[in-house]
Amino acid sequence: MTRWESLLAVQAHDTHIDQLTHRADTLPQRAELATNREAVAALEARAAVVENRRGELSRSQQRLEDEVATLNERIGQADKRLYSGTVSNPRELQALQDDIASLRRRIGGLEDEELEIMELTEPVEAQTSELAAEREALAAETARIQAALAEAEGAVGAELAAARAGRDEAAAGVPDDLWAEYDRLRSHLGGVAIARLVGPTCQGCHLALPAVEVDRIKRLPADEPVHCEECGRLLVRD
Ligand SMILES: [Zn+2]
Image 1 (cartoon, rainbow, N blue to C red):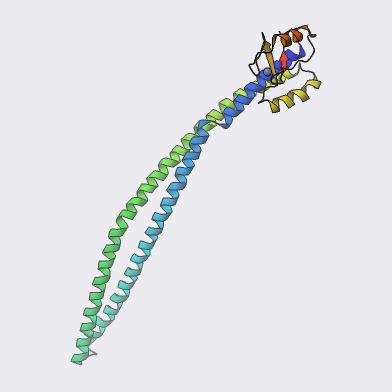
Image 2 (cartoon, rainbow, N blue to C red):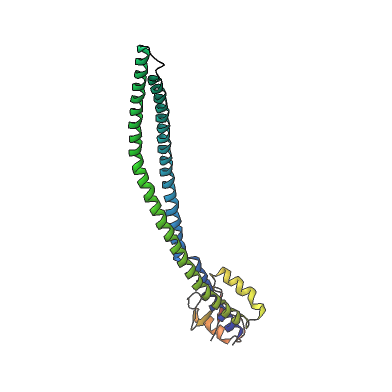
């Protein structure tokens, strides 16, 4: 095997490694995971709005309950005075009764408000439950995608390891002085530094060289480096 054949074998491995690396970087599960993350973020944004509303309603309800409790306390005190026997003035007794009646009316009004709040809370609670179910479904989806991604990464990782081992083996047959040019050409020519010349056609750029150029190449010593005049890649002759 000439050094050019050895280098071409390395190229085949490197091309394969590049493809596998690209596959690893663009596994469909990565896009799925990104979409899933967006869905989670959108859900949490909606949940924050609902939670905020739920908090507002809960605070309103608490405020009303506290107010009702305070009014009930005042009714209790008024009742006590009314039946304590310490108040005998009929006008004062009447005033106490009026007071109690007025407090009860206020409580009635507050209780109506409480009912309204409870009615408003119902759909918000329903939304909260729906969001919790959605969150759970999304979390299950995240776990499923992550497992699939790990599996796909494992598979492509194993292929990569095998390809790298093959590359190392092939690279052992390549003299050190070829690497600089190989690496330079690879970085400038889309990862392909060396290609076979099949008939008049460079397998790197797939262009046919002029017959006169093919003739010139054929007459060169087998070990002489040859470049495709179209793309500049190293050529391996049969
Ligand atoms: Zn070419």
